[in-house]
Length: 288
Image (cartoon, rainbow, N blue to C red; front, top):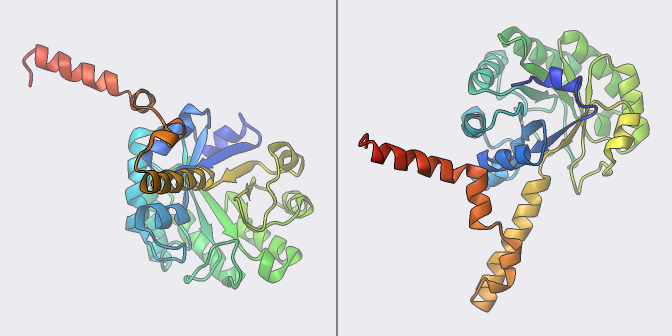
């Protein structure tokens, strides 16, 4: 499995797509993506039916990480919110993520009672506290290929100049990549990438404060990684709601069959027939 740093030399910018579970990770790989992502909001929303307000914990996220890495060998970037506690908790989080097969994580500078990065009333810790979080994470990292990305939500609160100062401090503390959240213009991206000595990620999430810039626009702005955290999940949810409403209203799914993945397509993604053939061979040999 290639690490995230190595992939940056092969794809520029590197597109990272959100996968909310093991099956969507397989779909992302089939579509040609080289790296995938597990969103904290995705875990909260899809696995637990909760809003993204810091209500899930390390064990909740690790369970989904393990399911994805078991079946998909693409590098997985994981959202670990604020690290779930003190320096000791952050260290445990990093070690657990490496053990579970994650390729990297992003650790953010919001307070523990965090909010979605594209919602108002966010609060960030002071720069020194975030640097302490980063140092705790770096000290716990025992795999040189594992990437620690520092996320900052300071733009909406402190403005661009102070956010750049934060980013530079985070890099000095050991951050190997930067997640610049909440940008509203390409000019902001250009300013950050010009001032930052490590790769910068742009979060291109739908229905938020950041315009849906193209890959080429972001490349010209110096962005090295582009994240699409919940695009497929939003599309899946909209389609699922339509199917549920149609069946309830009409009493049949006939009119929405064209919106569905076929049984054979599902089996193809899962290599179902190969597993079935293995069973047949074992039965034929009398091993079961």
